[in-house]
Length: 349
Image 1 (cartoon, helix red, strand yellow):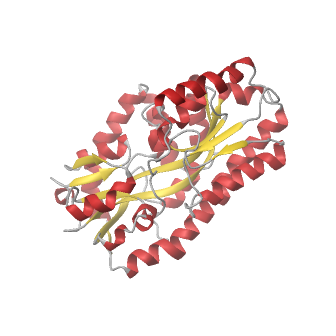
Image 2 (cartoon, rainbow, N blue to C red):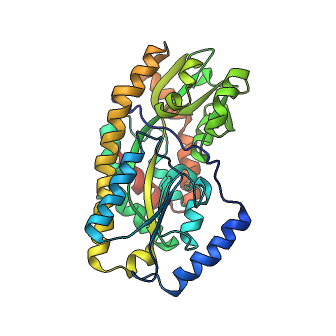
């Protein structure tokens, strides 16, 4: 793995997403339990994720998180993977409504509602992946600031897998300058990604990853912003010809719980969840990066996809162009001082 952090896939849209009527029914049922007592013993805690066991770079981290929480805290989770209880876009709303007590979710799905999470998704905060990893550590000052902001929305981030930097992938021509992006229709998976593509002069297209192969094959889109994992898991290296390697975006796959749920737990269970979050970050990320290095990256290279590295002079105009994304995020956060503090902590990690 190089310094640019080629890494993991953006979220797949679940085909098992719960219809709104069923979601409201579940919220009314399990939510009633939560309202009558979030304390341990009121009901079996529910853990949910959209991830499936087919994510061989991500799911081992989920399993380690759950095993650690069980072993150290005695949690007897009812576990619902693969969107069986809540689809990807419903996980955090379901958490806050008491349908689940712990969810494992991709930050890009929820950073528009919890904008402090966007601090770790912004483009070109750092070109050093090791520094980005240190910022993502659940014991870092960045994570402390994130949880300070999340507390007001009854959310707590326990820890997450750092999935690396997103690259720009294209079919017809390589991207070496911002001018090369102009007019291209590029698939994105989150709001900050979309703002980045717009800042570079492209047109963001929101598509589920299951639709990507056909969209690229038909020319509906010209390329995409994504992690290496999406390229391989969807066989997109059969179509894509170029990948421009730089910090165009990033996200994390995090474990979240409600702050009131966490606060009602006895100290040993709080410590167990915190330790599970650290295991998710350390062990989960290590497994993810190993899968990318030993399986995904060789598959892309063997398929003949050209990976383009940019030098400092080539990176500078990209950095200048995406400064507008940073300003928009700061405005969305609504606290310029906190936004500046978050970026400084990431750059100094």
